[in-house]
Amino acid sequence: LATSSAKGAVGDTESLWSDIEARYSTSGAGASSTPGAADLEAAYTVDTTYTRLRSTAAGAIGSWRRTVDRGASVGGFGEAATKLHGRVLNAFNAATQGCGGGSRRAARREELELYLNGAI
Image (cartoon, rainbow, N blue to C red; front, side, top):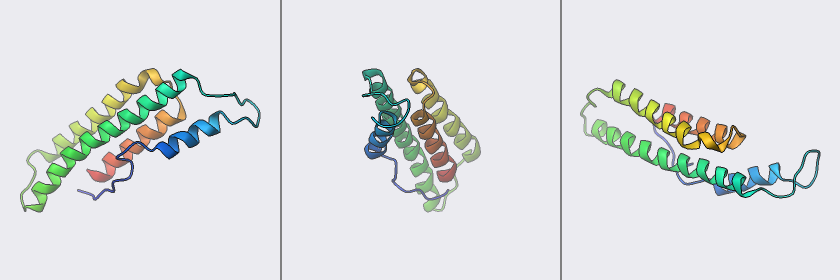
């Protein structure tokens, strides 16, 4: 099992606001004034879903890691890891489907997948 950092375990508020500021900048072509409630709700849903699912995955991965640290093997690890990977990404897709195909959703999904690939 790979080691992972705690980065991203909590919603990345600074990144969220940077994304919002970039999208709704008052300068440049195509800029709009302020984010609407739907945009803010979508960003919130994406971030809270990411945080919740990453935390769930970290719990399972931590349990496997503790088992290995005790010198034991994780029975059925390959199948369990594959199921966890698929279940977490499918849950993210389902929970954020109504949030549009924005860059924040894609970025958070990629972060989640990179975390899973690195930690498993």
